[in-house]
Image 1 (cartoon, rainbow, N blue to C red):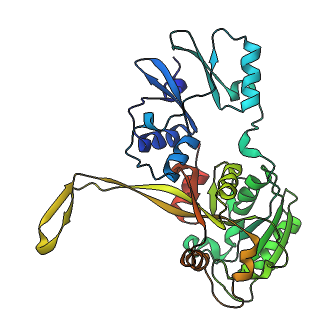
Image 2: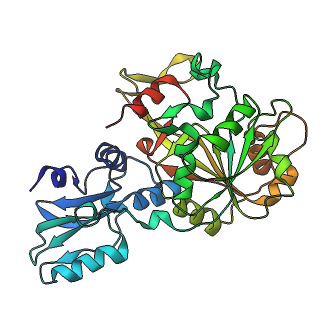
Image 3: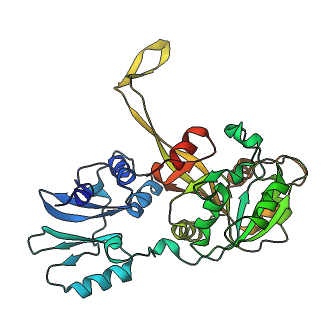
Length: 352
């Protein structure tokens, strides 16, 4: 069995955290679940996300979250039927299983088609707000010369990289919040960008926080919309995030990354008078961290005060206090990059 297939194999006894780590390591969102060399199921990132949303611990074995039925091919099917199956379901890959549940072959999408068109690229046609007004202090001294949205990522800029991900799923209308070096940003997109984006700028007269400027859009956006920081790169199915948002009737959905922290020491829990209650040897802790990408309902724009600093966390806390629906959609740690700091920026531009 070839090396790239070997890297996709996972035991049903492995836990959810291990599966997430394996997906990030392989750059795939689908794994082959085998036990004693025989096919058990397929594990998708969607399976894991549904488990996390249901508050199933990451220590749970994946056999407890597997779907009862998955789409596979059999040795009895013709090659043409299998290829048509891949086209229909947009599979990253499909295993071919024999009567003894042995994997005889794995057919990958990239081996058949040059263009990647997946269910992740549904035509959503929703407005996108890009928050590009900050000074980018974490990337100084580079941002003393260039505004953060125009920092290079390969042959284009940071903001173009983010916008292109939305364009791929049919979101072409951008509202860009600007302040620091605003004229520089406008000049670049008017004269040097290789792409034609539909951009409407809205400008703060002074810094208003991560959401304060959104009140300027209260009469312009009338549909569910995305909000993204200009330094948050998300390799994810935006259509699935939107589906979760709508099915749960959320007013805000926060996209979170599962960030793991390894503690290389034994940790102690103490009680009254410093008496030891429990200890954990070199634990790995996982947190849901805010990626800086959200989905909002347009009515919320009227609840943002004008002309004062107002962070999006203020709005989220307000809704929670009022018992309103704020959802959290999880993605793997490797699916999100905060390119607004030097370490992650350098990793991102030097990735294979």
